[in-house]
Length: 207
Image (cartoon, rainbow, N blue to C red):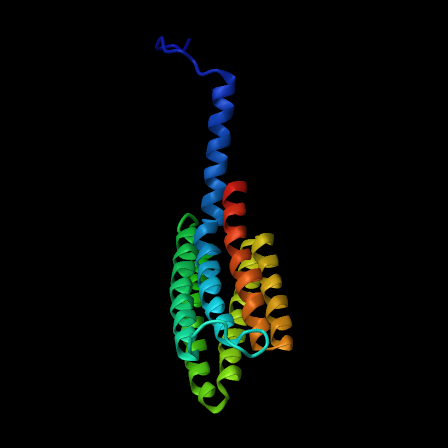
């Protein structure tokens, strides 16, 4: 009993409360995996899936999806995912004060700015290329940008899962470029799109 007559909490209740507070702090500092990884997974699964249906592995499309339609799906998904990821990083930085918070906020805005700049550059050069090469240009530089930003974010926040996700994206992107547009779209949709969704839920459950 406490001095005011109330029942003192049992030791196991105190330990459970401490564990819940620790978990909440970890989630706040590391960010919500569903915001940091999930949007990219959905965008890549839909966008690169549309490109795979357009290209096919043997050059024969599996569905009547035009290059412009596949590109629209991919770009809309990438812009939305970039905005959501930026929001997640800025919100994650909001629990920190001082220079670290400012650094995190700037890194969050870099995501969306990088996506916009990538779109401008690719839109300038893609008309000079055949459709299949233009699509590969858009896809590969988008994945390259995300891979580099993930690795940079892992370094900034000492977050090894984020860093290794960036390495995985870079490796799949490079392999897909070597194999060609159809394989690049398939690998990106399955290994990166589906993989990002799985990573998001796994990290959320683990946290």
